[in-house]
Image (cartoon, rainbow, N blue to C red; front, side, top):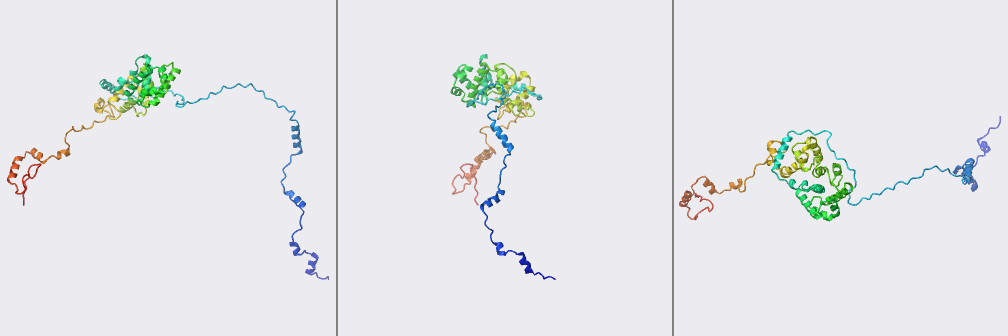
Length: 396
């Protein structure tokens, strides 16, 4: 048998390194070796292939010989230069005029008893002299050559009483002479404003009058147009003015001129179901059922009636026949008349003196005075009451 191997013999054969030698730092590495070792981790951008590089070189070399193909083009025609629109200060921006509605698609129903009501209003108007009868737009129409005066009068009448409008028209004629387009354009703003300064919105209406005169000269041969749409294209002119101008200036019955009086009175009479909220709605309703022969006269008829009797505030229903006949659903019952001036009130009646009360009851005041004198109390003097009858005093 061989000799047994011990553990120490095995360790000596393996020649294991010393522990201190294994913990010692590694030997230094040269910088060239370090760069070579780290070069594997550096980013290298891809290089173009030889084939791609050769193509680019060939294209660069052939640039001098390259001539691009010019496309066939037609000769350019210069477009017209756009005119720059400069808006003047104080002038309204141009807007496309909407056509005025002439009639309803579905006519309004004819109100009951309207004819009786209409005839009664005409009877009452015979005894009434209203401002519209002498100072309305018809008074500005002296002859056929003065249609412009009618149009200007209508433009001034908006939000203005007839008396103020008539006074302004008198001043305009005195300053400008004949109311023609040429005279209006020749007048300054200050001259026109001096004449119409008491009219409502007189500054704005001054501009409307001058702009209207200029448009009449440029587009309508210095005359008033004959259609509603053309009239409404003028600054400051609406459907009411247009229809009235056609009736008065041209004697054309094309519709009803509805102002605040016509709008208010026809609604008070219950002629609109449901009630209308604008004069234009009122006009379309009335035109759908009122006979056309009555269209020109209904405006001055109801305007005068509204100026004197059916006023906006405090209508005189006690003077109106319609309220007594039960034809006006908006009639206001008259209040009880107040006492006459000087009539004593209840408080004053209660303050009457005792003497007046006793006289009314028939008491003989002289007999009472005599009895009191006989039973006068010594030391108290004469009369005890200087105001009323003497009062008998009883001592205990």
